Image 1 (cartoon, rainbow, N blue to C red):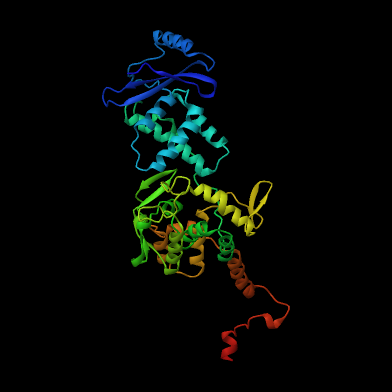
Image 2 (image 1 turned 180 degrees about the vertical axis):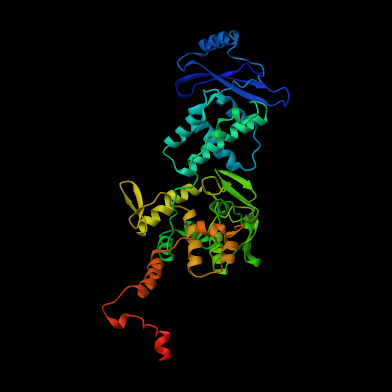
Length: 401
């Protein structure tokens, strides 16, 4: 094994080294704060030598439970087998930027459930994010137990006792009416117009749209194949779910818009990305976050759909927490259901495994809700003008007489 090396995160000098599990042959990264970051490497090595002599730093594999959370977290990230690149990116970010800074210096099994619960509740994040932090932290513990780094049993996994953390997201989706969407589209140039139109009428996910190649569009069959996605700057083969791999219908009008764009783009080969990035000479798709920040949101502001006040975004006077590509997936579902489309057709278009997702993605428009409410009011409210009232039904007694 290598002698080790130093890191200097957040003003501290940290000694890092690796040990090897004799059973699995896997390498585990360990770390120990040895002083202030102002110490030179030479001074750091002197401290490391002393700590090794005292048995504080152990270079042999130690199956004892007295492992720091930073140790089991490093092992988890290094040895976990990831099914999705997007999951790896997200969990690595949570571990390195959220969990380790707070819990890394503590002995893992000595972390108290009450402390974790109090910390989670104190965070200024959405419920869904708070629950993700808890879930990832728990996964780090269970993975370490399964790998023999920590003893088995709930007694050595404090997260198993962390209960009562809200799981329901407090995020409320923003949906546009068809008229609002049209105003936004009218403010976009051809490339961005084609991207948003594709999202707005097919409901495909932004990662699927960005991963499209020209060869994925089957013009003669009026459909597209979702073969890969573009997530966190990485191309990932396959779709989000098994049903997501199914084909996406391509209407002739939409197909013509794509053909018009293909005639304009310099990246029109079969294996080129439909929405290739000029900055990377077509080697990657465009980054969705850039399109949203530089084109979609400004277009919505110019169209009068969004309003910016004091650096915050509003729609019809309501604060908007998120506005982006996913807005159109919610909007499309709501449009289809408002038009009385067969729920099974909507499910198939959005490529869901069951109808339960309709409840999450369908939102009533204000005009429709007012109309529905008015229909009830006409039957319930007394009018000063008798002619406004609906004729009352004659009672059976009057009819019989």
